[in-house]
Structures are given as C-alpha cells and as structure tokens.
Length: 460
Picture 1 (cartoon, rainbow, N blue to C red):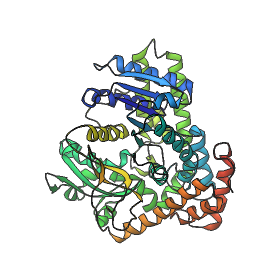
Picture 2 (cartoon, rainbow, N blue to C red):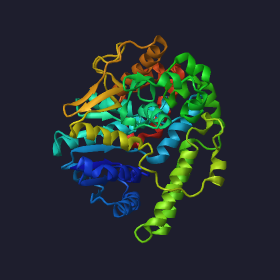
Picture 3 (tube, one colour):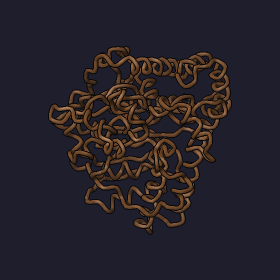
Picture 4 (spheres, helix red, strand yellow):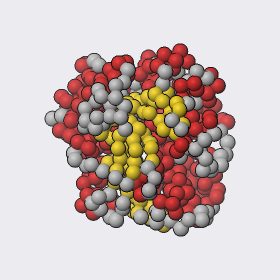
C-alpha cells in the first residue's frame, strides 16, 4: 500500500511517520511518500523521517518529491496537510482580524476564511489530479479549516473525502487516559462542526462514563476542560471542544490575544525558523539522534504555549523559552493526533473489524437540524463498505443555533471561494457569529483580498 502525505515538509510530518511506522505491518503500508512544494524544508524534514525509519523494525519505504503527480500516482490513501502562503500567511490572517477588532485565530472566524481562500483552490487541484492518476483513492483532509475545506471538496463531487481533526476525539482520549482503558473500547457521541463540537456521551460497554467525570474536579483540571468554568460545563452537561473557548469567552479571547507581544502565528514563525536553522547546522543525515532530540524539544516547546491564554497556569511564551528542556519521543500510548485519526480510518476500511471515530463527513440525516449535504463533525462507523455517520437526532437549542449560524457562514464561504465573489464573501463573514457587522465584514474581505492577491487572484 502507498500512503501519500501532501505537505510532507511540514514540521508535524515526523510525528505522522512515527505513527505510521507503529502500524505499518498491521495496515500493510509499504511506501509513505512525502510531497511538498518547499524543496529545502522537504529535504530537512524527510531526513528526520528517514532517521525514524532506520531506528524502527519496520521496512516501510520513505520517498520524497516536489511533484504532486509522482506523489499521487499509485496512492491508495492521501493525507492533505498544506499551508498555502506558509506561516507568513497565518500572521497576516491573525493580524488583519485583530486590527478590525475581531478574533485573530488561524481557523476560527475571519482568519479561517482567509486561510480557506488560499487552501481550497489548491486542495481541489490535488483532488482533481488524484482522480486522474489514482481513481478510487481516499483523501483525508487535515488542511485547515478542515470542515470548510472538506465541504468545498464534497460540493465539487469528490465523494471519497473525509475531514480529520484530532480535537474531534479529545473526549474519547481524555476519558480513556483517566480510566486507564484502550481508547478504541470507547464510543464517543460527538456532534457539531469542525472546531465547534460537543461530546454528549462516552460509552464503555454500553454505559455512559462521561457524565460522572464532568462533575469530577480532578478530571476537569487534568484535561482541556480546565479552559472552561465548571459552572459552564455543568450547565451544558457535555464535553466542549477547546475551540468553543473563542465563542463562550469571545471578549476574553480577543483581549488576551490582542495584548500579546506576538500572535500565535508570529510565535510559530520564530520557532520554526529556529528549528530549521538548528537542523541545518546539525546535519540530520550525519547526526540523526541529535537532530531528533532537537526536534522533540521543539515539539515540547510548541505545545507548551498552545492556547496558553485559555489555560490556568500555562506558561507564557517567554516562560516557555526559559524552561522548556530537551524532550523524548512520544510513546505509543500517547494520543497520536491527526495521524492516529487517519490511520484509524485506514484500519477500518482495510480490516475486518469496524472502527468508531469522529470525522468531518456529510450529515446524511445524522443531525436533525443540518442539511443532508452539510459537512458536520460527528461520530462514525468505518468499515470495508466506507464511512458512515451515526445517528444523533435532535440537539439542544443553544448548540443548534450556534451550529446553524456557523454552517450558514461555511456554505456562503465555500460558494464565495468557488465563484471568487467578493459580495458573497462579505455575506459569509456577516453570517459568522464572531463578525456579524456588514462594515467590518466588508473591510476584512477587502484587506484579505489585497494581502493574499498572489494566491487568490482577482475576485469580482
């Protein structure tokens, strides 16, 4: 089996490769092709990936290319994780939003729209090429905003596309860790949209084990639910996706992010530059173990400040720079992130036993208040016959209203990007709960179109 990672020069690629190595024999993975348009980053990152292979007992073959056709030819599964415009595009997305008094975050709100403007046309191009050279292959899209990108692909008739996000299964993994059980034994009842989802139950042998944990202060403080006041968690009675912080604490999120010396994007630019400079100086091929130690330290430092403004006791970027030390490779028992989600889908499609996981797929009647073709984030059964969203039915009115508002934004955003329509883009941002204002939406669209003209071209 050939598995292709589009965006294989990204800094998360070694983690993906490490997960694939652990499951290669079970899944039958023979080749993992890393493709990236940045040849220099691909050279450096692929060196780390090959070092992982040499240290492994598996004989998986790592290939690299800057040619998408070469990467996609013969691939049975393709994971897309690209950042069109690189980290500099993210910086613009965040800073422009903040200047207009709204959340500056790369996937939620106007920043997510700007990223989608650049990402969707590129991913559509890869999907069209894949149909030519490897008909019947699956795409697992991790390119953000994952739900909106997946919606655009599905709207264009690409049926073997699934959106993946590690946050969709956070409740399942947190409960599994707390109870000391295999996460695959748990069935989590997830509903919502990407980066806007809730988990209302987690079943172990048919019994809901989530409800009592939501009343356990020790459990709450050990998970990302510590971002939310216990009173809010009790009122909603569900696990909250971490990105709901930007909606339930909108003014606090804006004030905190706007008061930082650097946006998250600017912080990542600096961390990535530092990592690549270190790896160039080390020479990955000659000193693989030293290079891997540097890489794992980078991952530890990057993770230390993730949404730090929302987490009590989390270090500031300055504190993390001072105190983050060398780190070891993640263990097999740790959450595998988006790689684990992608590999779980492959396992379900290839093996005899179904896999249950939360994914971004067309609703198909699963959530009553959503249209059949709406891409939603919902728990699914994956088997040899495909990916099947499982019934959710009605959802509480507060969640329904927020979902419907954001889904209206997504429908309009996908239409605007397809038609290159400025007017529809303004309507899309007006529909978003974090923007609403016509005057602000107009200013945001015009500034994003000007800032990203090299990638999005001229809109009418």
